[in-house]
Image (cartoon, rainbow, N blue to C red; front, side):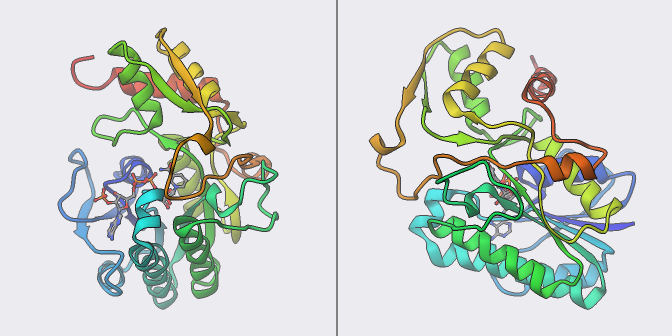
Length: 299
Ligand SMILES: NC(=O)c1ccc[n+]([C@@H]2O[C@H](COP(=O)([O-])OP(=O)(O)OC[C@H]3O[C@@H](n4cnc5c(N)ncnc54)[C@H](OP(=O)(O)O)[C@@H]3O)[C@@H](O)[C@H]2O)c1
């Protein structure tokens, strides 16, 4: 199949390109030059925020399926620049959806647990979102843009994405490993309950949802379980055999531009029933994360 993947330089999009390349004709779409390892895919640069270049790239490639994983993901950056967040996360998804509607292509748009306010998680797909903050609102409106403008589309929500893949950007999980390895303490929020997503696992679920199902509407495609960030840091440290100080911090004690959901997390029963690539238990996800990390050059 002809498959286009946006956010290709990102955590989830990069994994999706790596998994789909070879099996499909893949157009990887990212901002600026390609930062992925070489592979059997084409590259196109497009700006999600400019109102037209993503749509033009898609119309030129004529994909049968589009995984839209590109987004402005810096939650506090979005709070500081809400217009940029809107242009990128709503406008970018609108471009993808318009192109898919014109081409009759299937769209899966990736979204976030942050569409919920974190008052009473974990949340199922039918729970009513209540986004707080510019990032959360822009992602929630992006969900609607996809579902309303691209017939038959799906939204795949993930949460706390991390990857050990060579070249993947730093995340909380990689910072835990790097700081504890250097003997530095790690600060972690003790009162944020989250689901987590190994990028390789989330990408596999998103690709399966896109290419092997006709599922329409919202699906939670993170890994299984809900955990607070201190416990998550401890589990990461334990898997890497690292000891060291993990300092619990309360969210309210840190002045952050954007609000954070506290009792968050996503239920994954539906994805577990629907997909071959099931949401992973945390110990399995961390085994894979460790293997990815160890495959980095020089380790
Ligand atoms: N990361 C998380 O913890 C998390 C949690 C919940 C949901 N999500 C969602 O998961 C999806 C995948 O995110 P991710 O985790 O892979 O994050 P990521 O690594 O930040 O990837 C996002 C990609 O989007 C690209 N991008 C941003 N603005 C752009 C623009 N104006 N034009 C073109 N490309 C642009 C970024 O390009 P550059 O690489 O050049 O910056 C980046 O490669 C997103 O929908 C995100 O909202 C992520």
